[in-house]
Length: 315
Image 1: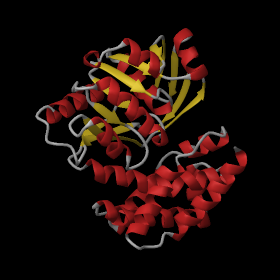
Image 2: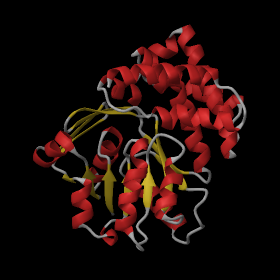
Image 3: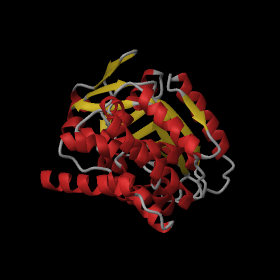
Image 4: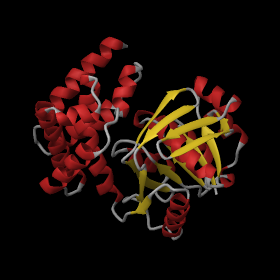
């Protein structure tokens, strides 16, 4: 299969490398110095149980759209930050045209698939998420990864029951697992996206604000209480999207992040490098749904406001 990974950073670069190492054709879409290093030196991935160091096919998104036709790609994998989804979707809409090339989101947040559907149509969008992975671009061309790096895939709820959707998901499931990417297909991807958002809302913003990794957050009694409070608020907010999560679900995810190897969250890494944060896409999603439900989310609101102020002062 030919995979096009748009956003070949920590997440996209890792999964793309896994697929290429297993014999799949992968085009890595990147920009800036990272792109130049990919072109000249290739990609290096460091995982405790796996190494990748090889030349890769890499180009900018503009170059790819100008030189390629949609039928040449079996799957577009979108791994950009969630605040870039709308702009990328607009670019892809013109390029994809009437083709049937599918697009898979592997991003943070619960709104990416809806944005993609709005611009690209209902039948081509697949939902997905990366779980139990800490993966960061530590320097141009070099990615450090920890965790089993699992993937969950599913048909987006608003998509029509396209005849090829189920077969495509089965094929991707087989290809990903063969590439040693532990993957499963779910019949409720929206539920899985919200489960991940519960974790992200709990640790990402607080880690950026405190400059602490997840291990230090979870081992501190006071901070871990805030983490649990923010996770609880996200659990309640999911109801606005018709997703039913329970206190048991929240406790399960709290224990999951508590037992997972300490990692720097993506938001902490972005904060350290003075890059834009996915604050609206994580905390903002919880706050907007809470408002719809006329429910307060004080933990999330306070951390959101403090981090918004802290990040504005660094820009």
